[in-house]
Image 1: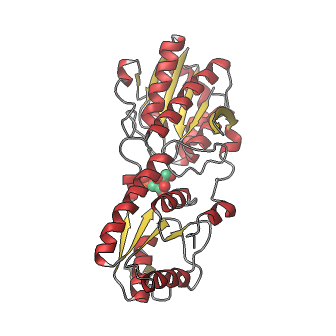
Image 2: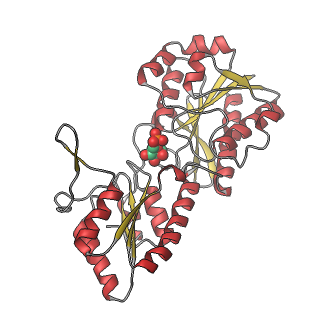
Image 3: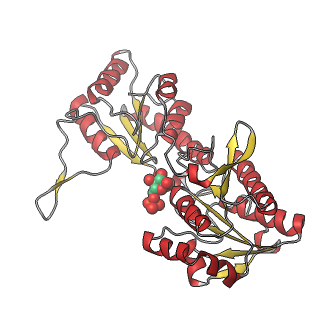
Length: 341
Ligand code: F6P
C-alpha cells in the first residue's frame, strides 16, 4: 500500500511522534510505502511531498513541531481539494490519506472522505476540545508548561506582593486553564464556558491579603470573558477610527485588578510557548498509539473515521461526529476546581 500523511492547522507537541509511528507501523509492520505532504493540505494540492522511510523519522519522537510543516488553509482551497479528491488520490498513487489535525483539519478530512478519498483522521489539539476523544495529544504538554509557569509565578508574586494574571490558550474551551489552574493551585480560574464576576475575584484577593497572604495568581483562558458590566474601570485603546479596542483578557484583567485592589498586578501571556518544545511522555505514548491504530484502520479499510481515546482504549470514531460540537468544560468539572469564578 502507499499511504499519504500530512499535518495541518496549528502545530502541537506529539505530531512527530504520530508521523514516526505511522511510518514504523506501515513500513516495518506492513511493508507499505509512506509519503509525507508538506505544509498540510497545501502540499497535497500543490504537489509538495517527500518519501518517508525509517531514516526520515529517526530521532523525531521527542521533537516538538512537525517535520512536515503545517498550515491553516482557506476554505476555498479546502473545497478545491474536496472537489478533486479522487483525482488527487490517483495523482499521488495513494491508497489512503492520514491527515493529523484539529477541528478544521478533521472537517477537511471529512470533506475529502465524503468526496471519495480513503481517509483515516488523527485528532490533535492542545485545547483538548474535540468531542469524540477523551484526550488529544499536546494537551498534557500544554498543561505541564502552564502549570510550571504558575509554580514559578507564585514565588516572584510573593516576593513583590503582586497579583499575577496568567493567560493560557483556549478560545472556546477552558481545559488548559482548568487543569493547569488546578495543578498549579491558582487562586482564581476563569474559563470561556462561564462569564466571570470581577467583584468575586477582587473579594477573593482581598480576603487572601487580609489572611496574611501576600500574593495571588489568577489563571485565565484566552477566551474567558467578564460578566457584563463587571469591569467598569477597563478602558480600551482608541484606534485610528475612534473605536475602542481591547487587548487580550489577561492584560485587561490585570489592569482592572490593579485599579480595584490598589495592588500591583502583572499580566503574563503564555501564548505559543504552550505549543512548542518536547512532548510529555503521556503525549508521546498517545500520539504513538494513534499513529499505530491509524495504519491498522487503513489496512482494515476502516475509512471515514478517526482514532479516538475512550477510557484507556483506542477506538475509531466517525469523522462526521468529530466536528459537530466542541467538547467544553462541563459544570460538574468546574465545581471540582473550587477556584473557578
Ligand atoms: O487551537 C490551538 C490553538 O493553540 C488555540 O489554543 C489558540 O487559540 C490558537 O491555536 C492560536 O492559533 P495561531 O497559532 O494561529 O495563533
